[in-house]
Image 1 (cartoon, rainbow, N blue to C red):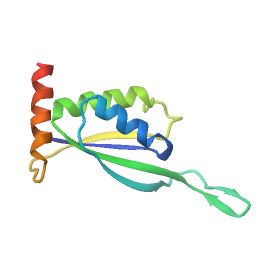
Image 2: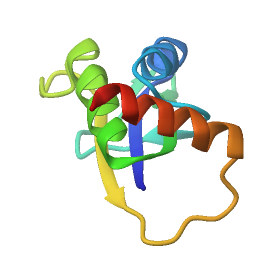
Image 3: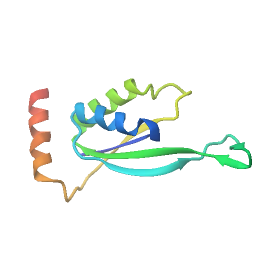
Image 4: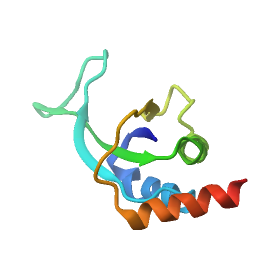
Length: 114
């Protein structure tokens, strides 16, 4: 299994989840945060404007995670430095607590890819 982590602007959260699910992803854990970059913060009438982001965490079989990541990279133009999105994967050696229905779905999805 692989952990696919996608950091995306809040406004794109629902569209990213929908695209991921259409690409074979199952459940997702959503974390909310703020993007703090190297550039100075924008201030408007004394209020500091920060970018709110959503961190989407998917646990997927490696083949499916690469397909989902490719779809999200293209849909949200993540390779464009002007965009504020980021996606990466991390290999997982031990996983516990996955739903058996989701495991069967992954198994069927991988069989259809072969």
